Image (tube, rainbow, N blue to C red):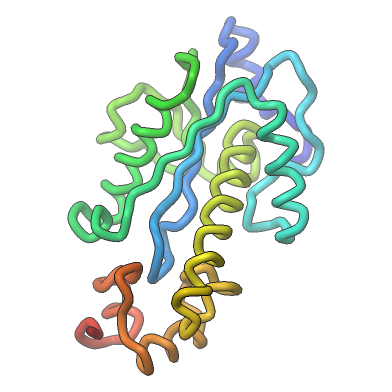
Length: 207
């Protein structure tokens, strides 16, 4: 992110928007764990925090440092998640949309504009502007990306202490060789997405 606030956000501010909510998810692709969404409103009268970008491009220590700073400066922030059960019931796209809707509704302010990473989400139920690659080019979305990833990664590392066979302390639920080996050896936990695991292993779901 080369210049702090993006052109999109600057245009919204120029049009009178005070509360610009950035929304992003973390956890669409893993074989285990929830999808976590953050909705955040950053103060439009302050300079952008230096270093904010797509959370995946940052080292863990830098993400955690930035997440603390972002939380301290945010005007409003809300988190929501869709569980493995919800993902299995609705599919990952709809589960993510539901979590996004919940996060936006939980904000302590009513946003004047909502910016969402990725493509438009017809079922979101909230007027929004989609920004493809927004976590890398849009300040508000980048802030949401960082907070969501820090929260989800911490959750998966905690779960790793109870389920040590899968390497979640390092892969945070993604389908690494260590995770796949754990599935073959120990089978599924309640935190696994059975359909995702079946696809990754190329066969029927484990038990």
